[in-house]
Length: 158
Image 1 (cartoon, helix red, strand yellow):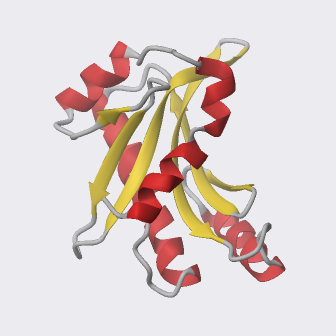
Image 2 (cartoon, one colour):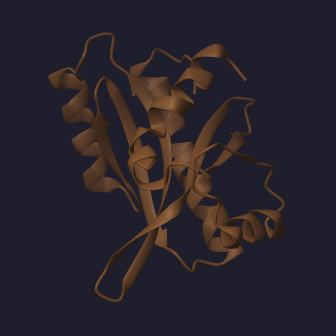
């Protein structure tokens, strides 16, 4: 994987550090990824890194978080992928507005900003089955790559 993508992994995992320092991976996710026949790596925080290969040969990394969030009876898991890194410390108004437009049409997930990074975050039920998880990974990676193509002049860094 490219150097830029490797440095991105640490950035994507910053929120997980507060929740899961030294945490183990969620065995449910491991079983689902194995069932879906998706290759992955588990990082030090217990999150799963999946490199999704698009039909045209481009690749896109997606992170499946082990940690889940709950609200009432709902329990969700995040699938995250980077789509754009601003050359400045924040996103430009043009980039931010484009991401808001995409949010309005998105079937799943929403764009968010962490510093100069635009990340697509898709939340799915924590008890999703293998097909649902694979679909969420495919959607997140494909949509993030489309933004990378558009806003980063076709680069393939993530």
